Image (cartoon, rainbow, N blue to C red; front, top):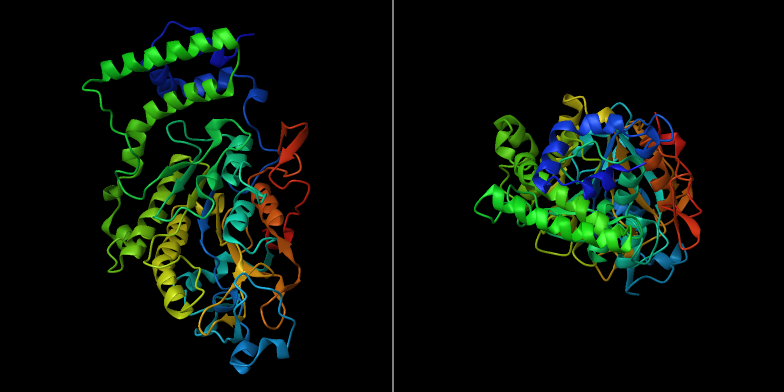
Amino acid sequence: MVSRRDFLMRSASGFGAVALMALLAEQERRNACAADQLPQPHFQGTAKSVIFLYMDGGVSQVDTLDPKPLLTKYHGRSPGEFFEVAPTQFNNVGTVMGSPWEFSKHGESGIEISSLFPMIAGHADKLAVVRSMTSKFPEHTSANYFLHTGHALQGRPSMGAWVTYGLGSECQDLPGFIVLNGGLIPPGGLDCFGNGFLAATYQGSVLKPKQESLANVKPLEPSLDLQRRKLDFLRNLDRETLDTYGQQDAVESAIANYELAFRMQSAVPKVCDLSQETEATRKMYGLDHAYEPTRIFAQECLMARRLVESGVRFIELTCPSVGHDRWDQHSNIKEGHSKNALAVDQPIAALLQDLQQRGLLDSTLVVWSGEFGRTPFAQGSDGRDHNPFAFSIWMAGGGIKGGTVHGATDEWGYRAVENKCEIHDLHATMLHCLGLDHTRSTFRFGGRDMRLTDVHGHVIHEILS
């Protein structure tokens, strides 16, 4: 048997013909392939794609999704009077600090959400809030690798890479895993979106939230014929390398990426052209907002919806630059968290509404999370330090039971005490919604079957519909 890739590599047709065939006859080629050659889910999933809203820096759970009245009651007192304080990242422990924001109940479910998110709160009945999430690492880089890859050291495949490895992509003109970068690449860098030991075709492709979203997406050659002849030449060199040395992942991935890059020349500008949207939609997301970071994140959220419509499997959104350090407020948390919330509240609320109106929310899993939480006591006088012992996330759409609160922290919001969850559980649940059993989603590397959840993880069934 000759594989499809071998046939394409050894055929005499030019690269342009290969790209054209991919555009016009992808379904026929898929049907011609044996079923076991295509990625298949382990069971019928409830979601087809994921939008991961990454809140870089560590959002304070006690100021957003986990109200703790005792913090206000004992504001200004020493935390050592009430509980044992573990060593913190910067060892600058201040007094108990009440939240500057009011909490109130929202929706029929009555989920309590702070006034930081007035527009997201309007969708409370769509959200499953997990108040008992924990991390194993109190430092940004390790915690970021852990959140993104299930491992604290760089070099492992990102969750987006695992998803596209397990399911492939429904879009043949765009990468299956796209990162919309609003201006802040997380600590740990691009390895947060890497393919690790998986094939290079599964790594995240970083786009900017604007029409000129990707460098060199416009051909530099004066004619399409010249570009095709150049690509033919590269393809012939790659084919000779394969003929000489046999199968090589780097070469095979390069061939696949050449094909994809050719198709992206027309697909990327089209999907990133937000002028095609109605004025009402643009206004709903906040593209006309007076605050620039809101406009940036609005572009990210609207592009995410368009990428879902195009069949992209996994989309991650990073935070826009707001003139200070992400959600990482070691001082002046009131100003910092207020600016960050202003940047993301309206765009995220619009995304949830838009997905629902278009019938896409049921098949799109939306996840909102940072890498850890923050302490219930002050760092210095008006900030909060890193807290890996408890933080809050929420999920919506794609098989999630809306209007749900899962888990609980102690009365101070310091440690998870009920239905404690870890990052491996989050990953297992995300894969489950996509129809993948995390214990069977493996790749043989270094003498063992590797997986996103390592040897850990349990699906959080209580938040599933």
